[in-house]
Image (cartoon, rainbow, N blue to C red):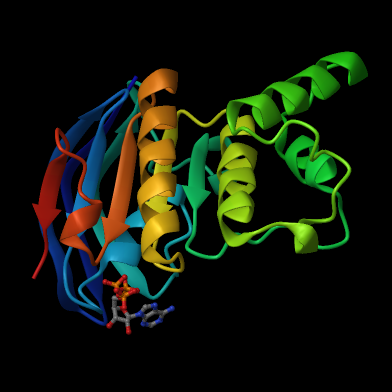
Length: 208
Ligand SMILES: Nc1ncnc2c1ncn2[C@@H]1O[C@H](COP(=O)(O)OP(=O)(O)OP(=O)(O)O)[C@@H](O)[C@H]1O
């Protein structure tokens, strides 16, 4: 699996925001995107997801697993987006939050198995019936990531995924995220303000 950005330009009100972004992220790799506030990092993620507001213009190609995404609607792009806020549904249990993300087509027993496996993978088996409000910040972060991954994305986009966590949680969640990306062999693009977030072997795009 690979995510390719080919000659991406983004403009807002006829002013160039991003110029000639070219990169290729292979499955299992994390490419970090760094740059000052307002330089267009989130706009780049929105472009890949298909949610760039209509007042922006762009050119170039977004290619995921040899499929050009440009004209596909957001729900057909198979891209998972993880925000700094964990956005768990408060009226659902942890298990229901996870099951919500599963694609259609699985039978009930398979859905239950997948949710259980996700809980095991994030070290939280036994939490299925819990209300999200009972979880710690780190637990919420892990469940939120597992929910995104259960939607079976072909690429993962991370928008400041660690910025709301304190230093200790940040380090362990960072390790957890990179481990998941590696073991699932999906390409990941991560927007961050923090140099420390960049994984050892990961590439970096620095925007101005
Ligand atoms: N819906 C919108 N309509 C008009 N301008 C917008 C819209 N969304 C963002 N902008 C502007 O586009 C520019 C790029 O915004 P963007 O959110 O991509 O930057 P960013 O690098 O992610 O910033 P930050 O690090 O602060 O999140 C900014 O000048 C912002 O004010």
